[in-house]
Length: 178
Image 1: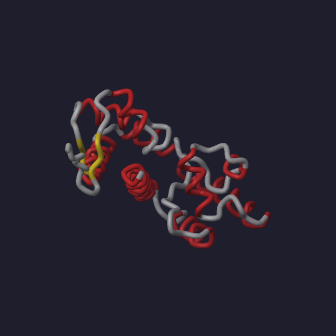
Image 2: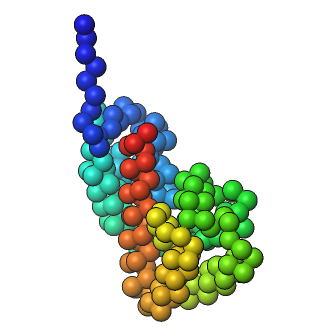
Image 3: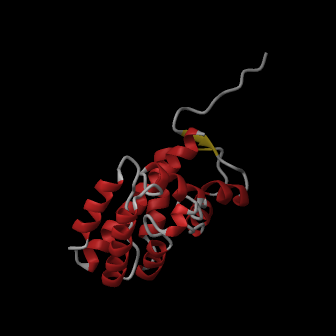
């Protein structure tokens, strides 16, 4: 009798071709499949990968890019509690994340507050407010929004990228758990 050997926990069998790899991991960084493409080019076909090693490879890929490409990555993220979120028109992952934080169930007053903060934030920084909403409710998110508006551009760009990496970490964990 042949035994099927399962990979250890937090390890995933990788696709043996680039297209499938990018299809599986391309949405981890919002509308930025180039991250998965670059990681594939760096690691090439491999049988398995550990969750932590893939997280780190993706993070290194983003951190090694130009400031312009990092800014573009930040700008790929949707506004929070945006009409597109209420209509379910975001990426599948963003829809689930915003729904989980209650951002699709805002009152009219909360919706206007988010809209005002989104406008003020983008006017000040030139990119959308990004926060890993998992485990947060809309009141915590609004409080973080207001605090971060006091940051300077360098501090906020670093914070936005850290939050993007956190979002990616959650998304990778979800993929590995499937």
